[in-house]
Amino acid sequence: AQKITQTQPGMFVQEKEAVTLDCTYDTSDQSYGLFWYKQPSSGEMIFLIYQGSYDEQNATEGRYSLNFQKARKSANLVISASQLGDSAMYFCAMREALYGNNRLAFGKGNQVVVIP
Amino acid sequence: GAGVSQSPSNKVTEKGKDVELRCDPISGHTALYWYRQSLGQGLEFLIYFQGNSAPDKSGLPSDRFSAERTGGSVSTLTIQRTQQEDSAVYLCASSGNSGGGTDTQYFGPGTRLTVL
Image 1 (cartoon, each protein chain N blue to C red):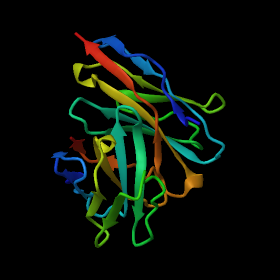
Image 2 (cartoon, rainbow over the protein chains, first blue to last red):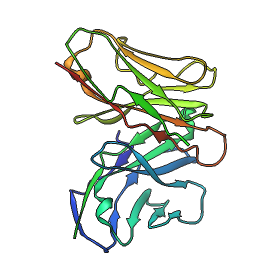
Image 3 (tube, helix red, strand yellow):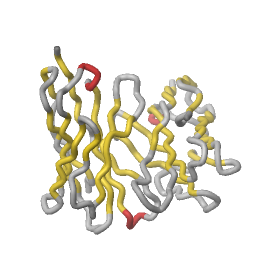
């Protein structure tokens, strides 16, 4: 079964606008972590933001925030004030404590293109 | 400080040959991971090393794949008798695995393997 679902088609975003990337997850574990990574065309995976399953506050890191809705099992990424450099693939990932190995399960990714 | 480094950045080989991919993790990180990213399969976990413990090899797709980590630092992923379906980007990541906090995995730039 797919652990992480990212179903949005490629998105075009106007520079300076906000964009929300959807991510839903599936786990029976009570303790887990959710991550978002950015992968520009250069290929490197860049860590953006983390949300723990027990965190009561939504995570924020600069222009990135995570809209965590635990009951719905969703962890949407919000990028505010988009910049041209935000054009990339964005991956949602989950780490489940029950595996005991910290491995990440990744979604298929969302393609974002920021236009001037 | 230096991030995760991988070499080579690109590798082209002929079907049936063996290849070795190298990963140098962030200094002081005790956990090291290998993932594979291909168009058809997305990002897949391959293997996990934690300190001196036996590695978790549960993600390796066949016995042609093996990995070792010498001295708790540098890791080598070896693919024997390469097949065309092995063509992918091989990503290495490391984390501090402090047992607390986020244990975020930081990725290297990857090795793009092409099997002709």
